Length: 153
Ligand code: CTP
Ligand code: ZN
Image (cartoon, rainbow, N blue to C red):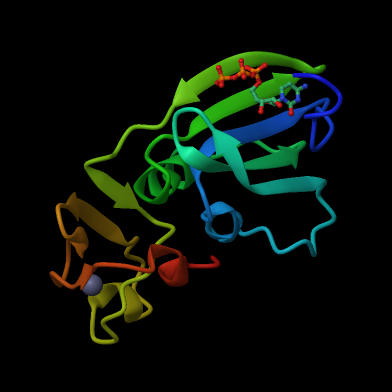
Protein backbone atom coordinates (compact mmCIF):
# COMPACT_ATOMS: atom_id res chain seq x y z
CA UNK A 1 0.00 0.00 0.00
CA UNK A 2 1.46 3.40 -0.93
CA UNK A 3 1.94 6.25 1.52
CA UNK A 4 -0.89 8.07 -0.17
CA UNK A 5 -3.30 5.27 0.74
CA UNK A 6 -2.06 4.49 4.25
CA UNK A 7 -4.58 5.72 6.78
CA UNK A 8 -3.18 4.61 10.12
CA UNK A 9 0.27 3.44 11.18
CA UNK A 10 1.31 -0.17 11.43
CA UNK A 11 1.46 -1.36 14.99
CA UNK A 12 4.38 -3.03 16.74
CA UNK A 13 2.54 -5.54 18.91
CA UNK A 14 -1.11 -6.38 19.26
CA UNK A 15 -4.09 -7.43 17.18
CA UNK A 16 -5.48 -6.08 13.91
CA UNK A 17 -9.09 -7.00 13.23
CA UNK A 18 -9.39 -6.47 9.49
CA UNK A 19 -12.25 -6.91 7.00
CA UNK A 20 -14.86 -5.93 9.57
CA UNK A 21 -18.22 -5.27 7.90
CA UNK A 22 -18.50 -1.53 7.22
CA UNK A 23 -19.92 0.35 10.20
CA UNK A 24 -19.32 -2.40 12.80
CA UNK A 25 -16.01 -1.16 14.26
CA UNK A 26 -17.57 0.53 17.29
CA UNK A 27 -19.48 -2.65 18.08
CA UNK A 28 -16.22 -4.59 17.87
CA UNK A 29 -14.76 -2.18 20.42
CA UNK A 30 -17.69 -2.72 22.73
CA UNK A 31 -17.30 -6.52 22.41
CA UNK A 32 -13.68 -6.04 23.46
CA UNK A 33 -14.75 -3.83 26.36
CA UNK A 34 -12.62 -1.00 25.01
CA UNK A 35 -13.87 2.48 25.80
CA UNK A 36 -10.50 4.24 25.81
CA UNK A 37 -10.26 4.48 29.57
CA UNK A 38 -7.62 1.78 30.02
CA UNK A 39 -5.07 3.73 28.01
CA UNK A 40 -4.57 1.08 25.30
CA UNK A 41 -3.46 2.29 21.88
CA UNK A 42 -6.43 1.83 19.57
CA UNK A 43 -6.84 2.82 15.92
CA UNK A 44 -10.14 2.61 14.11
CA UNK A 45 -10.73 3.04 10.41
CA UNK A 46 -14.31 3.03 9.22
CA UNK A 47 -15.93 2.66 5.85
CA UNK A 48 -12.88 2.38 3.64
CA UNK A 49 -13.24 0.70 0.24
CA UNK A 50 -12.55 -3.03 0.16
CA UNK A 51 -12.50 -5.29 -2.89
CA UNK A 52 -14.22 -8.09 -1.04
CA UNK A 53 -16.66 -6.23 1.21
CA UNK A 54 -17.49 -3.00 -0.57
CA UNK A 55 -16.80 -1.01 2.58
CA UNK A 56 -14.83 -2.30 5.53
CA UNK A 57 -13.70 -1.22 8.98
CA UNK A 58 -10.36 -2.01 10.61
CA UNK A 59 -9.64 -2.05 14.35
CA UNK A 60 -6.06 -2.11 15.65
CA UNK A 61 -5.51 -2.76 19.32
CA UNK A 62 -2.00 -2.51 20.68
CA UNK A 63 -0.60 -4.88 23.29
CA UNK A 64 -3.74 -6.96 23.54
CA UNK A 65 -4.81 -10.36 22.24
CA UNK A 66 -8.39 -11.58 22.02
CA UNK A 67 -10.13 -14.38 23.87
CA UNK A 68 -12.02 -17.09 22.00
CA UNK A 69 -15.38 -15.76 23.27
CA UNK A 70 -14.52 -12.30 21.98
CA UNK A 71 -13.62 -13.73 18.57
CA UNK A 72 -16.84 -15.80 18.58
CA UNK A 73 -19.05 -12.75 19.15
CA UNK A 74 -17.09 -10.70 16.60
CA UNK A 75 -17.78 -13.43 14.03
CA UNK A 76 -21.51 -12.88 14.49
CA UNK A 77 -21.38 -9.18 13.57
CA UNK A 78 -18.41 -9.34 11.18
CA UNK A 79 -18.42 -12.78 9.51
CA UNK A 80 -15.64 -11.88 7.07
CA UNK A 81 -13.24 -10.53 9.70
CA UNK A 82 -9.62 -11.61 9.83
CA UNK A 83 -7.74 -11.54 13.12
CA UNK A 84 -4.05 -10.69 12.65
CA UNK A 85 -1.64 -11.13 15.55
CA UNK A 86 1.27 -8.69 15.27
CA UNK A 87 4.64 -9.18 16.95
CA UNK A 88 7.52 -6.80 16.35
CA UNK A 89 5.66 -5.37 13.33
CA UNK A 90 5.22 -8.77 11.64
CA UNK A 91 1.92 -10.54 11.08
CA UNK A 92 2.72 -13.80 12.93
CA UNK A 93 -0.77 -15.25 12.73
CA UNK A 94 -3.79 -14.58 10.53
CA UNK A 95 -7.11 -16.28 11.15
CA UNK A 96 -10.54 -16.00 9.61
CA UNK A 97 -13.34 -16.01 12.14
CA UNK A 98 -15.76 -18.96 12.30
CA UNK A 99 -19.40 -18.74 13.22
CA UNK A 100 -19.47 -20.65 16.53
CA UNK A 101 -22.17 -23.10 17.64
CA UNK A 102 -22.32 -21.55 21.10
CA UNK A 103 -21.09 -18.43 22.86
CA UNK A 104 -20.09 -18.88 26.50
CA UNK A 105 -19.87 -15.79 28.70
CA UNK A 106 -19.56 -12.25 27.32
CA UNK A 107 -23.25 -11.85 26.40
CA UNK A 108 -25.93 -11.31 29.01
CA UNK A 109 -29.47 -12.61 28.78
CA UNK A 110 -32.15 -9.89 28.44
CA UNK A 111 -34.64 -11.97 30.44
CA UNK A 112 -34.51 -10.65 34.02
CA UNK A 113 -35.90 -13.93 35.34
CA UNK A 114 -33.23 -16.03 33.67
CA UNK A 115 -31.08 -18.09 36.03
CA UNK A 116 -28.04 -16.32 34.60
CA UNK A 117 -29.37 -13.06 36.09
CA UNK A 118 -30.06 -14.51 39.53
CA UNK A 119 -26.63 -14.01 41.08
CA UNK A 120 -25.98 -17.72 40.77
CA UNK A 121 -22.53 -18.88 39.67
CA UNK A 122 -23.82 -19.71 36.19
CA UNK A 123 -22.02 -18.49 33.10
CA UNK A 124 -24.23 -17.36 30.24
CA UNK A 125 -24.49 -19.70 27.27
CA UNK A 126 -26.13 -18.91 23.96
CA UNK A 127 -26.70 -21.26 21.03
CA UNK A 128 -26.19 -19.65 17.65
CA UNK A 129 -29.36 -20.10 15.57
CA UNK A 130 -30.56 -18.67 12.26
CA UNK A 131 -32.53 -15.86 13.95
CA UNK A 132 -29.70 -14.79 16.25
CA UNK A 133 -28.49 -16.30 19.51
CA UNK A 134 -30.71 -18.25 21.92
CA UNK A 135 -30.14 -18.48 25.68
CA UNK A 136 -29.44 -22.12 26.52
CA UNK A 137 -31.16 -21.66 29.91
CA UNK A 138 -34.39 -19.80 29.17
CA UNK A 139 -34.72 -19.81 25.39
CA UNK A 140 -34.76 -16.02 24.98
CA UNK A 141 -33.51 -15.06 21.53
CA UNK A 142 -31.39 -11.99 20.92
CA UNK A 143 -32.13 -11.15 17.31
CA UNK A 144 -30.31 -7.90 16.74
CA UNK A 145 -28.10 -5.33 18.42
CA UNK A 146 -25.93 -8.09 19.83
CA UNK A 147 -23.38 -5.54 20.98
CA UNK A 148 -25.88 -3.95 23.38
CA UNK A 149 -26.05 -7.29 25.24
CA UNK A 150 -22.35 -7.43 26.00
CA UNK A 151 -21.73 -8.18 29.65
CA UNK A 152 -19.04 -5.74 30.83
CA UNK A 153 -17.88 -8.41 33.36
N1 CTP B 1 -0.85 -4.39 10.08
C1 CTP B 1 -0.57 -3.45 11.06
N2 CTP B 1 0.66 -3.42 11.66
C2 CTP B 1 1.61 -4.29 11.29
C3 CTP B 1 1.35 -5.26 10.30
C4 CTP B 1 0.08 -5.29 9.69
O1 CTP B 1 -1.43 -2.64 11.41
N3 CTP B 1 2.81 -4.22 11.89
C5 CTP B 1 -2.21 -4.43 9.49
C6 CTP B 1 -2.24 -4.11 8.01
O2 CTP B 1 -2.40 -2.72 7.84
C7 CTP B 1 -3.49 -4.87 7.56
C8 CTP B 1 -3.52 -6.09 8.50
O3 CTP B 1 -2.69 -5.75 9.60
O4 CTP B 1 -4.66 -4.11 7.82
C9 CTP B 1 -3.00 -7.35 7.84
O5 CTP B 1 -1.71 -7.12 7.36
P1 CTP B 1 -1.17 -7.89 6.06
O6 CTP B 1 -1.41 -9.35 6.24
O7 CTP B 1 0.22 -7.42 5.84
O8 CTP B 1 -2.11 -7.23 4.95
P2 CTP B 1 -2.86 -7.95 3.74
O9 CTP B 1 -1.94 -8.91 3.06
O10 CTP B 1 -3.50 -6.87 2.94
O11 CTP B 1 -3.98 -8.75 4.52
P3 CTP B 1 -5.17 -9.64 3.89
O12 CTP B 1 -4.56 -10.59 2.91
O13 CTP B 1 -5.73 -10.35 5.10
O14 CTP B 1 -6.14 -8.67 3.29
ZN1 ZN C 1 -31.71 -16.59 29.61
